[in-house]
Image (cartoon, rainbow, N blue to C red; front, side):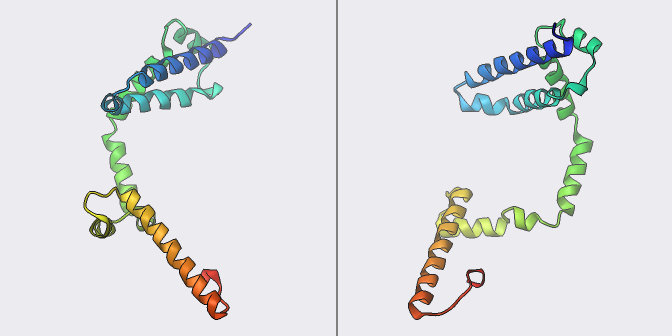
Length: 158
């Protein structure tokens, strides 16, 4: 016989599948985008319930009294996401204190340089891809030139 926790896990799995099917039924991208926070709350709540240690049998029995326990949990989680101003300030401080921002994110100066080079309407990711491809071509050309000259080289130095 299944425990309440096992039955609750199955119910939550079904709740997630039903929610996912409802969302995917929204063909309109604007509608889906408008539901981003809701989707995030449901997915977060779902992922957090995957660990059996999050609830005991009595609490699982209570949640099983409802048709959509995942919705209940996601609603409460979404409220926390909306009331996160203090936590967000800590995130901002972490970002400001990070030493690797220049390595992990595109600077505004570089983005403007890419727009000048590839056109104002260019998608920055597309421009970066183009830059990588051009760099690869230049490396290959340089390697071929060095090969033609019979020069020894190390690729790490090119």
